[in-house]
Length: 427
Image 1 (cartoon, rainbow, N blue to C red):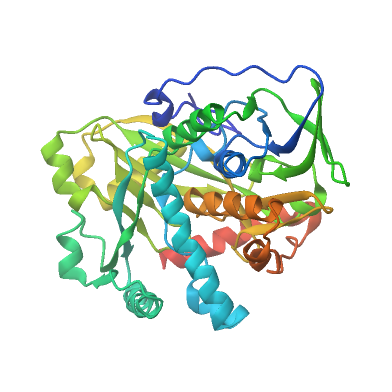
Image 2 (tube, rainbow, N blue to C red; image 1 turned 45 degrees about the vertical axis):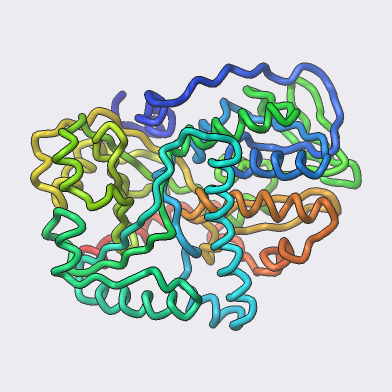
């Protein structure tokens, strides 16, 4: 593997080297019909299929690549609380009652991950405990305010850590404060996705890989058209997120963002245990954040940096290692064994974008870095709406989502904006 234009989104990951066995599934071969045709074999599509089959619907899932080869199998594996915007922002935007409803559903989203792992016996290294870390004085104030805010919403288990305390939780001198959240956590995302796919197959869901959808029909009888056949359903669900670009009114409201992870060679278990207390997942609160955790085989999985241009920066492997060593200089003897990337989809307001295209076509996208948990919630809400109970789905559907400005110039505009935020983080 070498750094270069758009190469890291397909580069081998540590997740792939430790993935549980999963068979190659055949592509679609001919036309067929079902109750619900679902586009996307990741967290969103597979959770929707499981929720619907439990309600008695027949489902077909179409995946353009392999199950889990998109963001669902290449992300940081961190199960976050809440949403990208803070709750105080949601109260200002929507009022207390709607913000409280959104908070309760975000809490439910973490429970969906936990319940799926238990119900389907998914071996995905699920672990609870999460640390947000500050690196400057204004972060200290922000984390104190965040603790107060979450306590007001019932999350009394979260607690602020001052500089002395956080030094006993993470073996780094860079942090000035932190906040511990016992209800957030981490998983092996690819193995979680493959576990959902196994459960879906066992429930009778038909999943077709290597079947790219070229066109969708969103009328009263929705259809997904491919060069291998057409699948018609009474309903359709679009869950391709950053990789689904066939519907312009959806694509204009998200921006695919490249993000990257490296894994080191293994270290001794005693050394790993000393590095991060209780092997928690950690993220700083820079705008362009760094996030990391320890793997079960005692590697550092360190993520960060973003690309709005669709290109991988030259020398990215070395740059990621330098950033890791900035926080953990004691890891200088470890080599980088894997370096990979993938695309997440962000919305303008950084909230999930759920809605309808026509009467019987539903979509979910724009999870903005919180997709490990919120995709499962989206799947449940779309299944509820298809089954005739759309009140909770409509809470999200009512959230206004503007298209990204600039049309064909939006990518260079966002590149410049990201440069400004990186400079702000550095200062």
